Length: 220
Image 1 (cartoon, rainbow, N blue to C red):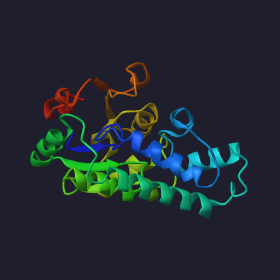
Image 2: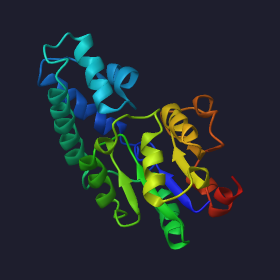
Image 3: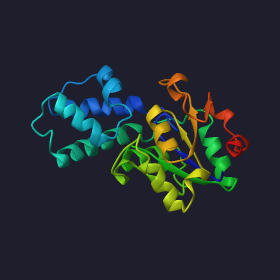
């Protein structure tokens, strides 16, 4: 296994609070009063085009069928989130060391996220790891979000790599489903918002990045 693909939110960084605050501000600006409970129960982890349709329909907004309006909402939210994270977001313990170890060890590294490239670039540049990934695909780079495997299959295709020779590091049930549906191995990493029970379909569940080494990856 010489190709490793990372998810970003919840894996490289714990960024959901930033996304939550950005969505609350974005929806408040158009008269939709969501709160943190609503965000984490109905929006968190979903592709932007999916979540915006859900919210606009639930609140019967007049632009609920307007794809361009939803795309504009996503763009505004991602610019807000990117500005919040730029220069302040911190990496999860051990993840930067693992990325450097894999990069110098001859692994091809990809990143596949449902978050737009504005926010992805803000995170990677802040952590000074934007040059470590050979291929990066954000939310606007796919037509269908996770749990559909499109993002991971697209990265494998760009690498000219057999999906069965790729390992994905994920933190959510939808991300694991996407990786496994793509035919890839999946390591799930525990964080402050998930549980081992919801990660049970991964090939391996790691409590921290110290448990993920090249040797562990090769044994999958």
